[in-house]
Image (cartoon, rainbow, N blue to C red; front, side, top):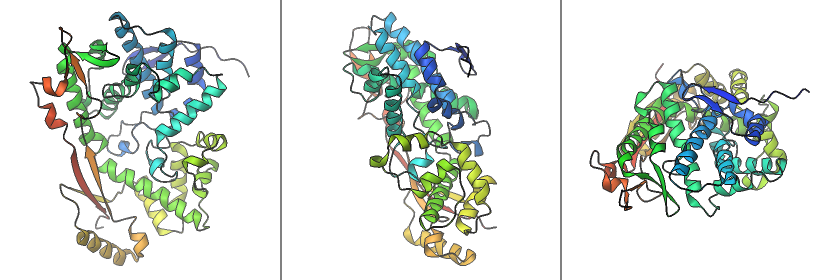
Length: 408
């Protein structure tokens, strides 16, 4: 095949033109592992609530890399030494931080692979790419795993004020139309500072940090934990679990080659060989959507109903409460539904279930956001804040939910 002309500039709706910094980054973007992210939605099932939320992990990874370039420039201008090797490693680490996400972003982790996080799969993919690129990703992997001696580099990739969060809040806000999440990423990056190997923010950036923490809280309640997105995500997980259960029982569950492999096999962290990783790397949203369209006609009532609900956006009813759902309330609902649809005890658990959601905008105990004053004093933003009580936002809020079929 002919060699493609090198693509140097990408037009992004949020930041305008993004320049690919070097040949290695370009080759990683071109790699099939990374190109697959074009087919993985950034926000799972949120498009059922916000029709514009069809952007992908591909968009987000490039955006986060663009912000990392800005952060490197800012920190160098403030006399923080970052070598060319470290700079390239930061770009690689942030570009590939989400490469291990499965279809619809989080559904796979809770259904057809056994307790394997996307971070773990991202790491395996990076290690596989490192073999292919003859060790060029070694420093990036150390930064990603927080094993590199300069700790602030890891904070730029994964911390309270990392480039990942600064991009996804702004990007998700843009595509959903929820303006409350529009953080001023440029100003926040301009205020970054490194002291004693720790990332912090200049004191004059306090209001931008406050806005960032509030934006995060609002985006979680209004978008990421929106009750309709929540019930859709749960139905997706249950549909995949049902398909796996039926496959285990020997039933025929038509699906693509990659999806069939994960439905038929129990894959744990110990089993994840290079071959399995290769199969995983061919799996994306389209496998799930196409399977769902076939499963609508499946003879199993549960699989068929769950698929119909998702395809036609005819979801379960969901009620949010401040206290745990009483056991008798759930049993009562289950009995009603079992009788109405002639279901077994096991089958009804797919249609009547409970759970909880948590939201903590700022964790004061873990990885705090510190401010540095003109005199060099370091203070936690929650202690310095006069505008809003950040301490109140650091309290974990828990809500409980109950899902059950609507009365048709």
